[in-house]
Amino acid sequence: MTSLNKDIQEKLQNLNVFEKIIGVNLIIFFIGLFIRVVFNFSASLSWLELPSGFLDAILQPWGIISYGFTHYDFWHILFNMLWLYFIGKMFMNLFSVKIGLNVYFLGIISGGLLFLLAYNVLPDLFEGKTRLVGASAGVRALLIFLCAYMPHTEVRFFTFNLKLWYLGVAIVIIDVLGLFGVNSGGNLAHIGGSLLGYFYAVQLKKGTDIGKGFESLLDRIARIFKKSGKSPLKTVHRKKAEKFAGYSKSEFNELNKQKKIDVILDKISKSGYDSLTKEEKEFLFKVGK
Image 1 (cartoon, helix red, strand yellow):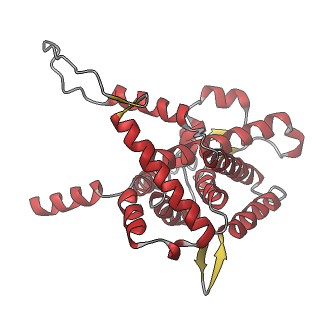
Image 2 (image 1 turned 90 degrees about the vertical axis):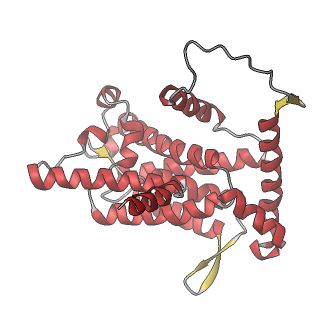
């Protein structure tokens, strides 16, 4: 039994960040399903949804992110999590964990904001109040980011190769057409996520990471919950961090690593993945790990 627990712990530790997000989504889905079945309460996760009413949304501010972890329909969560698994795996092989989290969560936030904006600025275009759920905006942000960052990279689609920008354009067209259907609110969120992913990729190619502010916020939140290993009675002299061209050693190494990744991604965009050398492929694999 101890060996089994150890194996489970090791497997959980080896999950990448998007696989862990998938796990959280599944746990919340089954909690909601349990509440609906046992207590016959249809809106079992209503406290996690994002209301379309502006005042309702202010009273439920966490909804701008928590709606992205909320699913009621089995097919809804199945397809969202499948997309997140495959796109997340591709993303992690090419970019850092922090950029992945920035794109995903900013995509969810952007989707929620566009949803709120449309329902409150142009209420006559929509039928009554509704609520937003699902991870689609974050998934769209990741997908469109990849499509915009390396548009000419080809992916296997059934029996033929398809350039990423073709896929991105098709997805956006489907979402725009969906604005005239029964799920107009959901498609608004999709478009919000897509816009964020596109803008993030364009700016990053220019050398600007627009997610740095959000990343700093996440780091501050993480530090609040992080257990301190220091004794309150112990005084420690900390040696001043050595600087390299104005950066700490870790920041300097991270900057060099990202530059190397950018060069390899540019090569993939122009000539495809198969044009990489063995060393370049191994480097991407290690970064993804």
